[in-house]
Length: 104
Length: 286
Image (cartoon, rainbow over all chains, first blue to last red; front, top):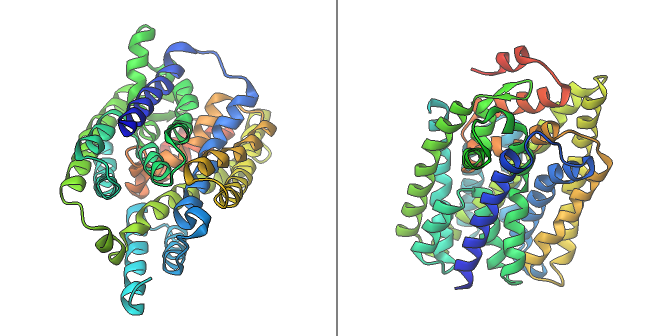
């Protein structure tokens, strides 16, 4: 029930956010301070998502094979490897290291 | 639709991972599929998944997912004048805004091709849903997921989106140097993205010691307050925020889609920040 509530709430909220720009605000601009903050929500949250995924609660999920895999992903991306291939490389690095070391 | 096909292929693969992970975390197949049908936003769905799995309650999870979709507000503002009809019709057309499509539809100079937007989105949505269906039906066990390294997909995906975001804004910053006042607003935004990411990551890491992941995720948004230093227009902000979309799953799988969407995205962001004209975008577009 809680999950369904969350799904429906996010769906409704996303609909509203997408509708607000074209329909409600028209050609008016948002206040400068709010536009700047909205623009930076994505990088702030993305960094938070990476940290939460890698560390987990009380940093209990920290795994060196994941860190190595993410380093490979960053390197690949800096070399302009397409996103999906870069992610695939990270998966292969993690799987390879775990196979070599017998686990994580 | 041709542009959308590349984005759809990447989204399909990513959606398989979403479906499989949702299944592993106890979501019913129907819930995962309905989420993809109704939300149709990879970054928001992954955020919801991560926040719910980390505990902390449904409120922070909803908040995190909606906040990450907050970027659609400036993107909608930017594309609004290119849509047609009354408010209701424009609201419906605005639903076609996902990151990859928004980038593909950008013509430069703040103008958008709405048919290109619709065409790119209309092929991504069924691919996203189909990938989710496949993911929940063929869901591998958690042990196998870890053995195959598939648990890396989420953080790797988010990390690439973040990298692309920072690179796009760095490019925008380079274009904006010495530009007009509005461009210098984009320049401040470009610097701000790095600070926002560092602060957001550090706050989330610290909070994880005391609070569940979902709450820590919402805490990461304080990094966005760096944006109070910026004086930018909605179009500048949309150009800057779209980078995550360029890398898009649904939205995000887009940039995953490859160098093509990617290059266009960066060109769009740079052009927005610098107030550049159509010619610059035209060179970058295939």
